[in-house]
Image 1 (cartoon, helix red, strand yellow):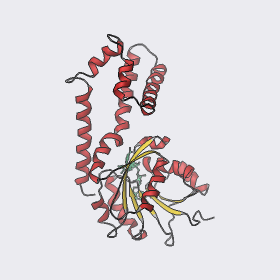
Image 2 (tube, rainbow, N blue to C red):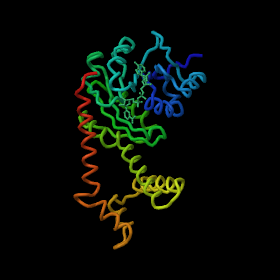
Image 3 (cartoon, protein in one colour):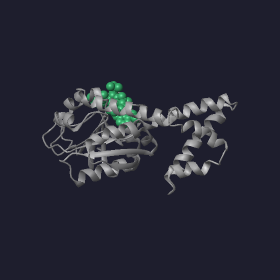
Length: 277
Ligand SMILES: NC(=O)c1ccc[n+]([C@@H]2O[C@H](COP(=O)([O-])OP(=O)(O)OC[C@H]3O[C@@H](n4cnc5c(N)ncnc54)[C@H](OP(=O)(O)O)[C@@H]3O)[C@@H](O)[C@H]2O)c1
């Protein structure tokens, strides 16, 4: 039976880490609104099982398929080739959604119709557990229907923010796109140190992960600022204060380190945007 039955048709090009994370949510939450077609040279077992269950069409796009939305989720270096391969399938009305880091509207437009509606999205990996944050920026050829589609799709993956300027995407990449890796590295280090203090690997992992999850949820669910929450944990001359005096040292604490790291990511994002293919 065809999965196409008059719903909005979405073609996903590339279902690796990010593409599959998006699909995992969309087959659960968006299937009543969108028909999902996927092009992926090395489909995972999960994707093959979705095809066998009739929830997605896989590597079989027919010329009569009218693509309403085409999501590019390939690596930046393969985007040029993927655009070229699929150019004929894309009508001038097809909304192009790109999650590809560092490839701007001009790059995308150079392979597409003039006035093609394009929306760039910068998600992050917690979309795989519907706790992502996706920043969205649309070009001038988009309308409210296009924005509505993308809001519905990415709302299902966590939270969204709308950007006014495309150049803000580099800042988003450096903050929330790469951000989960900064937090994972913090987790790795704190677990290692917990073990050095004599706790078992299992207990260390549990303590650290739940501390990060709990602090994240608390800071997102209260009107108190992060600074106020920090002060609430810090009693004068206590243990937290002893640690914060090290961490918040203007010269040797983590502010200058975090700043240096985020600037490195920001510069790299801008550099990638300047590269061809
Ligand atoms: N991971 C993140 O945190 C994150 C966050 C925001 C944005 N992104 C963006 O998401 C994009 C994808 O990243 P990823 O980590 O998911 O990469 P990935 O795991 O390598 O997935 C890309 C997939 O696309 C496939 N592919 C390549 N060329 C294709 C083509 N012409 N047609 C159809 N499929 C094709 C690849 O197959 P082969 O392996 O066979 O080439 C691969 O399975 C990147 O551009 C990245 O900037 C990622």
